[in-house]
Image (cartoon, rainbow, N blue to C red; front, side):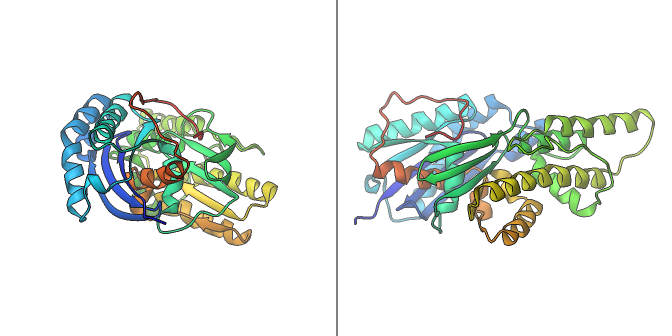
Length: 335
C-alpha cells in the first residue's frame, strides 16, 4: 500500500502548528510557534491577539515544517485542519490557510475535531487498541468516554462547569503564579504538602466532573486569609488543590475500569503532561492490569501532529470537506 502523507494545520488557541504525518503514525516533521510569552503578560490568552499572531506566523511555520524534510506540498495526499472546538478567530486563520492550500494544490481537505486529535496523539509512534477508555483533560474539557473503534465514541461523563485545565489556570492566577497555570501549580505542588482541607468535587458514583466549587474554595481561602492579615503557604495550597483535583479524576477512571472491565486507557489533552496525574494513573492501571497510553510531552499540548494522526482514518474513509468548511467554537467527542 502506498504511503499516505498528510499535512496538518492546528491553530485552535494560541499555538500555530503544522506537521507532516505518514500513515497516521509517523511524525515526519512538526513545527510549533508558541505565543505564551505574549499572553503571559495578560494572565491568559487574549483571543484578538492570538488570531492576529496566527496570521503573522502561519506561513513561517509552514516553511519551517517543510524545511525539515525533502517533501513538498505537491507530495501530500491531503490537507487536514482543526475546525472545532476553539477560539473562533484562531480557528478561522488555520481553516482559511488549509483551504487555500487544498485549493491551490488540488488536495482533499479533512476537518478534524481538536478533542479527537488529542486522543489520536497516542497513535503517533504507537497503535491504539480497541475497546478503550479515553480520558480528555485539557483547558476547556474534562471528559471520559468509551472508544469502541476508530471514531466511535460513547460519552460516559463530562464536566458540569469548569474543566480541570481551566481551574488550574484560575487557581494559579489567584495564587500569583504565571500563565500557563498548569506547570506553575505542578511546580509549586512539588515543594508543598497537602495541608489544606478542600471539598471533593462531585463525590459520587457518576462519571461527571466539576471544578467550579473546588476553585472557588481556594479563592475563598486566599481572600479570607488576606483579610485577616495572615500569610498563605502557596506551595501547600497548590499541592492540596492539585491532589484533590487529580484524585477525583483517578477515582472516576477507577469506577469506569470496574464497571466496563476495559483493559486500555488513553489519556489526552494538555493536563496529561502533569506528572502527578501520570503517576496516579500508572498505579491505578497496574492495579487493574490495564494498559496505559500517554503521549510524549510534545504531543500532550496543542500540536498539528495529533491532527494529522486523527485525519488518517478519515482519509481512509474518504471523509473529506469542501471549501465551505467553517469554524465551530464548541464541540464534544463526536466526529
